Length: 541
Image 1: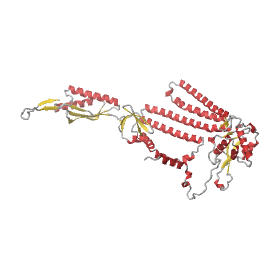
Image 2 (image 1 turned 45 degrees about the vertical axis):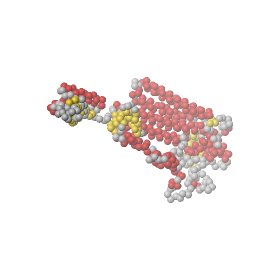
Image 3 (image 1 turned 135 degrees about the vertical axis):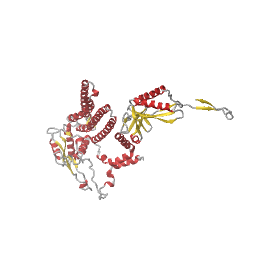
Image 4 (image 1 turned 90 degrees about the vertical axis):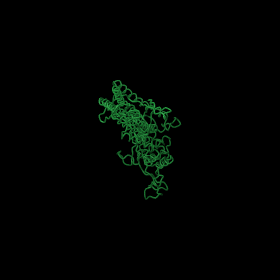
């Protein structure tokens, strides 16, 4: 049954916005109950507070930035001046904790040794390394709202503002937007310095890894067969990117550039860190799987090699999904709603992807039940050929015509599978016809000759081994042979079969017992046969 795409989209939207349904209300709570309102400046967590503050500073909207201060001053102009002073201090060497390391919990970090309502998020510029602290408090209730309807918010503490006020500063040293070209709230020169540092750092680590691999390649007589070299070859490129990100985060914080550029670059450079980790894990999985497959292939454990291939693909898919979720979290996409929606969204996905799920289950069945292995010659339904690959979705078979037939694993597991490669012996069951006209004694001699040929060959099974007169055929006396050729290789069995047939033919010729061929006896009757008692003329064709 196909589910309409519109229904699937509706289910996903329903899962993505659980708060829009009255069914989400707790039992016993009336539908008109007022829920906690969302803070208009998004200050519910330390991460969102710092992100909102940086956005306001990037826009040079110091009045907006002042809403992130826990100031007792009622003069908005003086508070906005404090915001400008904070940006000047941060540009002059202050630091902020990178976005991904900030707590996204409304309660903040509980194990940092600070009071529960205090969070450290950076340091001010200048001497002393004064910490930048956030404090959690409940905002004044607005008209028409009760105090309980307002969420707790995080703002820059009054202690930090007092330390900022006590710092000597020159607000005129801040370059105005009219004097320098700004990109996303920071001078273009600062963006260039940070991007150049990232490129130079990655280039240096990549060159170092290339030199290490080149040196090891010269030292190894056969580097392709060396396990340590293969693992280093897989690990060093992503490690060079990861180390470059770490070095950039250490050195980038010390560059004399605008805090907006620094914080933005440090936020999004985390994407490269997750890409490097996922790249490293995937390359290591490939290296380990290649080494295991090579060893299993040398021991002719082809089914285990197929399981390794399937496990490699599944692990890589899981790693890619985890990296994707981590990257979304790094760039600030709220994934909690998406994770909460997996229940209903998973049902919608299952309904829309029934065949895909069926094929995945079929692939597990094929690997677990092991009806075939990669390299086996088999017949699946009406497809005859050699198995080339058992994947997560389908199995590929190369036919004798050299075409490739792809069968979904769901259908594959449900079909009748005949595996020729698992035969331990091959049936030898010819029917040998001798000519009519020989006596019963001569026929017994022919049967004995065939029995002797079979008994003399070392690769013919003793049990069963039958040579019997099977039938009076239309043109011959049919002798049926039933036994097995005891070799596992198909090509070798064909050679032995040929030897047996030639030996039987030679012995029968020597005994004067010719092999019959299709023949027909025709009796010709003259036109006056009814009046003439003479026998008809016999002609053999």
